[in-house]
Figure 1 (cartoon, rainbow, N blue to C red):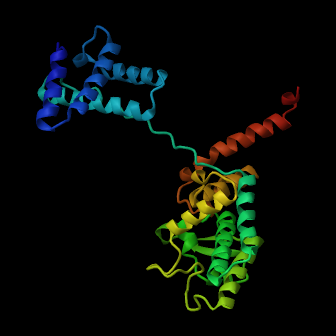
Figure 2 (cartoon, rainbow, N blue to C red; figure 1 turned 90 degrees about the vertical axis):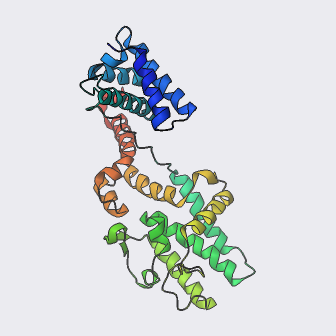
Figure 3 (cartoon, rainbow, N blue to C red; figure 1 turned 60 degrees about the horizontal axis):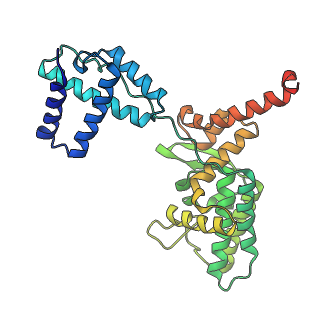
Length: 307
């Protein structure tokens, strides 16, 4: 039965064959010695799959994050593959074990009040006197971007690349070509439609970008506003609105669109279609919104909850 000699051989192999740094070796030693302590009298080399599964459960109870658990399991996998390759063991007890899946982090979501404040600030900026036509256009462009983004939940790449024809049609739906060339229809609010028409009208009145095919043109290589430029201007708008600029981005507004729809009773499948998600599992990151809404419904509607 093998002893700590196997651990030293393993670490020596990592240093000699893989050029592992001292910090890396120290990390492996720490992880494997922790598992050895968990095993008690049983040696590392004689551990079975159930021992390793129990150890992972113990890590979870001790509050280790999924990433830390995955790192510990990775160290064990490499150790037992080494023992198997060396002939110390006839099997690899980690072969059927997989690391715990990292839970999808919940998206940052703005409240409806925060979005209203952001939109109202952008609208107010369009009414301020400006010294130049370019400044007037920038203010109207930002207001239009915000209205359209919150009304549609478009990806920022889809938003900045909208064709000018989207504003010229008198339609409540616009056609979007999303990831993989897949097309979908998304509705426009009346406010978004009006903002688009006002912006295009101001462009025409100022004689700007007459031949551009883009709704949000620029002088850059792409011919339209870049995602980065919009993101910077959005943070400036957040500051003007008295909001934390670090918590606001175009993607956060897309999350707000989806979350607020669900809060107000929209079906998850409908939100999936509007966002252009190919798989419902991608949209299920928003189920925390549904869970909260169900809890509120039960607390407000169930007869026992009122007692």
